[in-house]
Length: 180
Image (cartoon, rainbow, N blue to C red; front, top):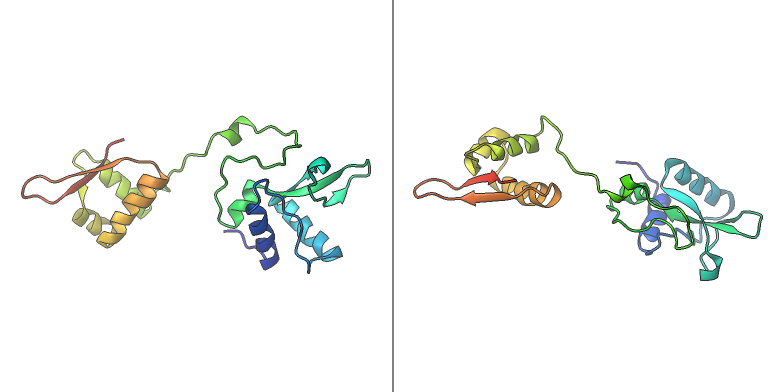
């Protein structure tokens, strides 16, 4: 995870609370060269971007461009990710911006588990034709039963979108399997 200063975290957190992600006004204690240094670092890392301010809407201005226009600071998807917020498919720029999202930005990135992890082992076991029991998964992963159930409902179902079913035949332990 990216290491942020307290000031950077506060700026991004405040921007995340705005529907248009504008990062202004900055902290009152952050002025002059200190503000320029913090913002410059965040622009370089891609956490903020400069976008033309819509002065008709009264958007705050970070700096003037010299032609009677100004730019404002907007938190990027990378900036939100740095503070642990998954960006929704929201517009990253104010309404006056002309940048249209590209096709790759419009399609959410599919999550895939890393190979060789306990989660990958769990998925392989659940994809087997007969599925797996909690006891079999406990032996393979060295997890406790509540951890396995949590991984199935949280990581596999919610995050990866896998469909998991269970069945219990007479006299046998419950078997879980991935049906998709």
